[in-house]
Length: 488
Ligand code: BES
Ligand code: MN
Ligand code: ZN
Image 1 (spheres, helix red, strand yellow):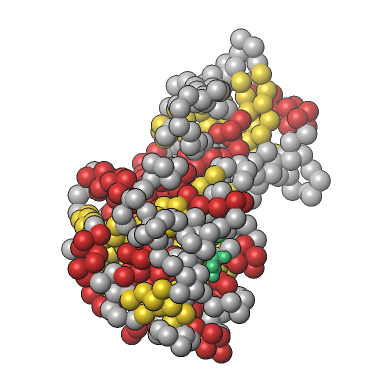
Image 2 (cartoon, rainbow, N blue to C red):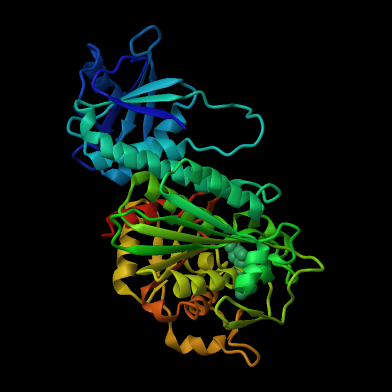
């Protein structure tokens, strides 16, 4: 991760970044922005000439590079900051870090009186836009290691810098976990990664249930889905329990380390990226570690049911009836509807044993999420208007996207089974909605304190785009952390 430092006395001015904002009129060239620290002599005049020459309009993420052989600075970059709010700075930071990846050190002269939220956005953009997942040697490794942010009063930004660093670090952790090939990332490995992260965080406890314990306690959904794999399932239970906590949140995340579809096997194109099917688990784990690293005064218990949905002689079959934690049963006519089976156990366990104030689950649950909402937006479900509004607001201000979807009462009948309490894979259509309705059946008395997000679509992206990088996005970590930080 890049080293980012705030300083009132920038020392190295080799590569200097100057923010520029849009001019007053629509079609005007950019304007320079007064900076917090003094610039080398002559630079301000040079920028005034450079802006029209570079045809800079100052939009967030526009970058123009001027090479000045032998000069100080030796490279001058004009960085468009658009509306200069947190989101614009996030975009600018990500664009900048791509433009300077072959430098080693850069200094950004921030505007006079720049807001802490803007600095937060900038740092998140820098740290997320420079993320890369690669096993083995890189052909063109980036060389940038240090970014100095020049401001008059570094202390004023300590909190914003800390929050941005931890948010980015945890988002990057979720990306790492999700990008990792499934040959490495089996349930035991995932649980081991969580244990390593917890070792650095006093105050967080971890319990990992192995198959024998899952059987003893009746986690039939997790065992059915994990039964076909040579790598047995696990249930990760993390707990951040600060003494001053007033609210207890339980987070649940789908952790299918690879989804072949099982006996109801997926076709090749649909299976290709199914190592990402644990992105919900990665997001809730990373958000919980982030809450602990920030010392947020809220209790967070996190459940990550981990299993690999494989095809084998031991795999569960379409038509099997699964008995979940707590006793509800599911008729499983399609083994590709596996996520809801493991989540059902975890939700039922949370309701029966953990007594939370709020219950939130994240899951790469259905392809229907993208059909309804496209590639960047999660589908959010809750009967609780306040909870839905709060979480939506947190998600949006963190730079992620979700849209609230309905839980129509008259669809509930599609969940009826002749043989069991519930039918796990109704075929009536509205796949994301029906999956949400199925999950609600396991939330018992907490149904109106529960919220579910189907994040199949935004968990992955196919190209670099602002702070997102190709591959896993770490979606949900930023929104959850912001929401947890705002709870009292
Ligand atoms: N993991 C998939 C959902 C998925 C699809 C995630 C595309 C990310 C991208 C899930 O387990 C699944 O297979 N869902 C089925 C449900 C159906 C069998 C009721 C689906 O969406 O087709
Ligand atoms: Mn599936
Ligand atoms: Zn799945």
